[in-house]
Length: 160
Image (cartoon, rainbow, N blue to C red; front, side, top):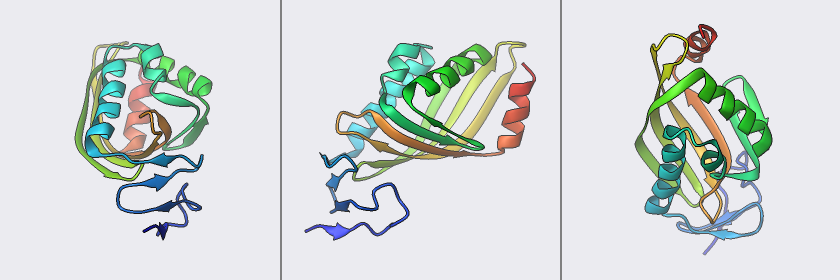
């Protein structure tokens, strides 16, 4: 039995869901389990750690949206520019997922990212939380992230 979405502020405001299935914004029925979500996150992590920009961008739908502290990026082409700049700034060292929770097609993640700043080799790490929607094929539709001390991270990036 489907019930109205309990969170009218969410991107799925017009969607209906039960404990395992969502009718997503595009009208597709999505049933995501933890293993499928973990596989999608593992693909993203592997591409990022390999600095494989094409494989990394293949993890996202074309009209994706990502919200990070201070800005929103819409569309894979715009995000590709940001990701390329991130790879130029820092060499990926680790992308650890501590916890994943799945509710329909929405995944919550607790993670830590570590890079080596290319300008001086200094390690830069930040821990954060994210919420995202995964399409039926496991690609990311939208991503919203929050991390500890975004001001310090911004300053670390400015040092390069």
